[in-house]
Length: 155
Image (cartoon, rainbow, N blue to C red; front, side, top):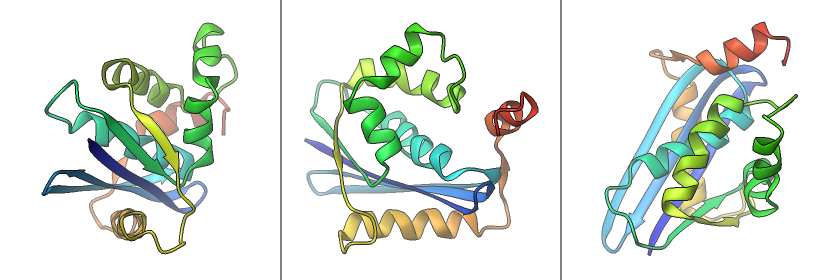
């Protein structure tokens, strides 16, 4: 089984943000992170899940995603994303990211487990460290999806 731990962070909401991912498979470990300027915590939480799934090299293995984001976990587990998709994501935020997530969900069929943030879960804490460090970096990327939605009056 592949385990993917994810976390997102934003300094201000919106503000500088970042995500952190820890991928575990047998004795292999990979860490990912990236920072963005002017974004939101929810966007970084969802982007962490996307980047974790995009990093997978193998199909057909069970994948479990551990996230402290109720926004992401509930949207998937409770099936909200499929209703949003049916309705063309009308009046929803982060549409660009949900549209990236859906094909990855179909491909890998991940199981989600919610973990309480800042509660001593070693891998979740590591993801938080990665996300906060990325958000504090000097080479922050533009979050074009956030900018587009902001220009449409979504934020």
